[in-house]
Length: 251
Ligand code: URA
Image 1 (spheres, rainbow, N blue to C red):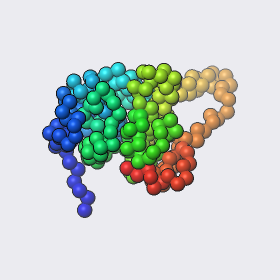
Image 2: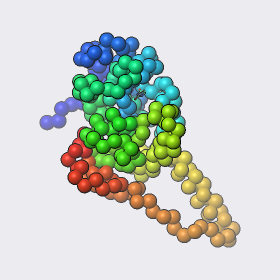
Image 3: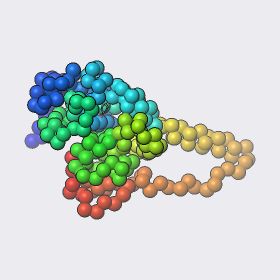
Image 4: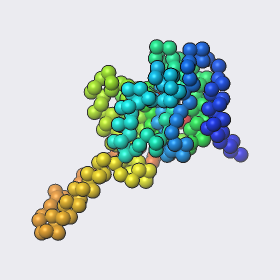
């Protein structure tokens, strides 16, 4: 029999009482997660930073402001999604999470994911991606493509904070969120994206010209291989073949 889902309030109370690792000593707040509990899209970051620790809310600092902008590329608003982190407490000086911290903290993320039951999980950066996809591959080789792990569609992207220090990552992030929007459109999770609005406007303009007897268009638009494909076997990326990774990509 399937274990019942644990309500988010219960999980949050448990996280707030947690003293399982030394990060509990230095925290101002446990940053459990926030957003729409019925979200179809779960965003998973790494760990709270200084502002998040002070406010108890994920992604409220500079990376969070940029994340809000990126969501719009996919046709999403912040209130449409749920946002959580791999670690619920801030590592001192924003150092990387330690394996022992990930091990004791991630049961919270796993239960959050079961309760929210999203269709898509967007992983921000290496730590979230490696944990969710159970892979050692880095984000540079994985970002911008769709993977299936168990029942979830997983879409890794660079961490938005990386783009604050490396502006070249901005183009990748913005392209990847636009690609995410295409997948969400196809899944019926968003009704429009900035790209689909432009496409509709172009189609209307073409129709208007055609109605006026002007020849329009350059033939059919090229089909994009990464969209419209049927999900492949669990764990296999949908837009690229990674032979031999099926086993390791299970959440
Ligand atoms: N970076 C993260 O990974 N999570 C936050 O909540 C804030 C910054």
